[in-house]
Length: 382
Image (cartoon, rainbow, N blue to C red; front, side, top):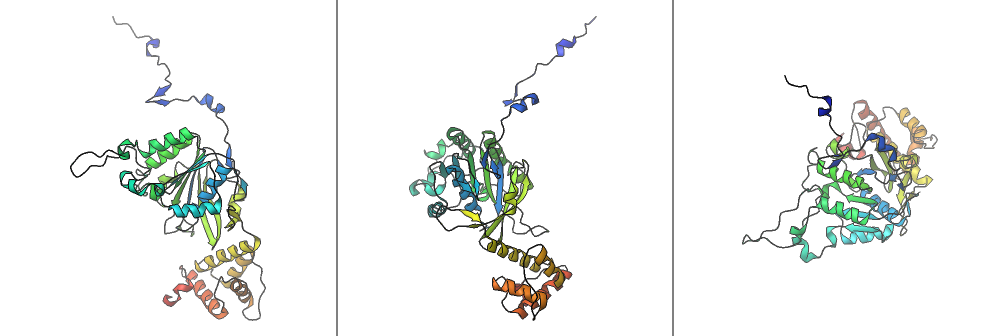
């Protein structure tokens, strides 16, 4: 007769780790410390942010302004930054470009820059490119005779490991990567598997207690609403608690469009304000004044017009006054459209000739009714 095993024989003792990963009991989560702001109403420690814009869309300018503000404990877009050490990892700028930008935004001993541009020319052939997707040490150089070359390449432990070690050693509060395309040269940004390595690095930096800002580009094509969209696989976005697009509604003026804000980090101030770059050394971006904002609204209105969002002149005039706050009265020549033209032409937003502008408006409205768009530059083909 066999004996039945007792219940105690199958008791499993709780484990504290599995495959090296520590297990956290949910009852201990209330002991997790609260977040601290790095920039009021914009960025907290352990935040991960994807900041993207088209080419020439002020991405690096905004990133350097933010880095200097945090490193110096200054201000960013008019909001207080809280001092902490910053690492700026660059994949495209020249030494002269850095000089120009830091003359514009200021400098700080709390800000370190990692870039190929600072390496001695004679050593560049011995160095592996900065590749954030690289998980293993690069292969050593091999000479023509088949002998292994001794140099810095063999000593490297892989960029991910090196950066994690550097951040932990120097207690950086913010790490900036500028940008995805130049720092992940072997990655297909449209392949979810390829961006997984970068996502892992971003998460692990957050676990070290620092904030991470990653700069990226937008697609050439916009979405159905005419808005810019970050380039690549949607998997790229998964690890970021905030995703912000820099928009340039008119020349020299920027605004932020917040696409994702998981932790409610970004205040209304950053969602509703426009900025322009101040030419004074160390000033950075400042809030656009009333005239500049009106100019922005003019640009937005005209963009909508050429984009096919209006089907009648009455609709165009009504939206100009109500949604964009443009103030104008009808003229003897052209009525309300004439008054709108006078306002827009005074700021060189549209053609100064009324008849030419009025003709373009009629073509844009006709195109909108046909489900198309029209731009004055295309009128020869219309």
